[in-house]
Length: 307
Image 1 (tube, helix red, strand yellow):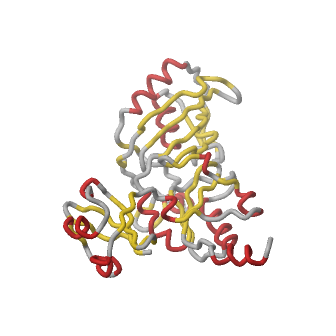
Image 2: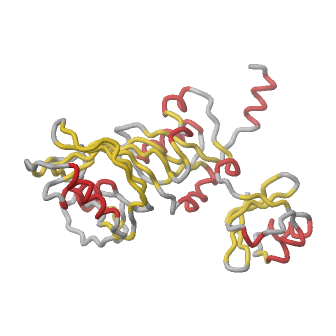
Image 3: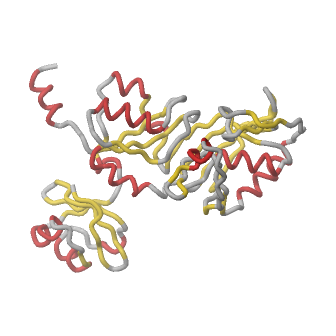
């Protein structure tokens, strides 16, 4: 590579941006963040949606100041492909846990489908005892390690859609493969537990692969080995978060730069957007450069992020 090209790449290095990674097995979500912080030599890295060490698939990572935007993805729906194994109970509700009990129940597809239909109508779910949910500032898995009992409450979340990928089959025991699209906060391990309970047996997660977070899919993800061994750039904020872009003139530039709340008349009179009331969240540009992200709240527009 010519010297001029090398200098250009260094100059254009993105330090505030996103990356979509296909998380490998036997690694925590935090492990992945720590590895990639070193890879890109960026001090801050966060992620959208924790995956258990045994799980693989889509993780959205944010670097630098982009970590402040992860809350924008909090309510994202997630889609999983999972194998549910029946007749076995573990302390973690997945295949990696210690086996507590076993049963020998004969199952059939009709009963399984009926019980999945019932679970799909529920609007709440009891989270697993071993999870990263915090109660009184402490994660549930930390209580579990100390053998301390915690009173759990059902949380609002639900199945949005599902599809049986492979009906009941038997390997080490009965199992099914199912695709689940779920809302924020939904645990597939709890789904396995509840499905097993409804069938008068046990259910745990044998395999779990997240294939999408909202509209971000595995097709957009990179393998960890590729990231570590190739020149893969972060995705710029404005390329990753697909918001409308409006251009302003000098009439309100100083207000935007100072993070001032704007009104409809300000934006209509000083931008190229005449349909501002139909925008929920948008970028404000000046002279081709992003200045801020604003959000409509009732009839006013408040700043959320400054570039």
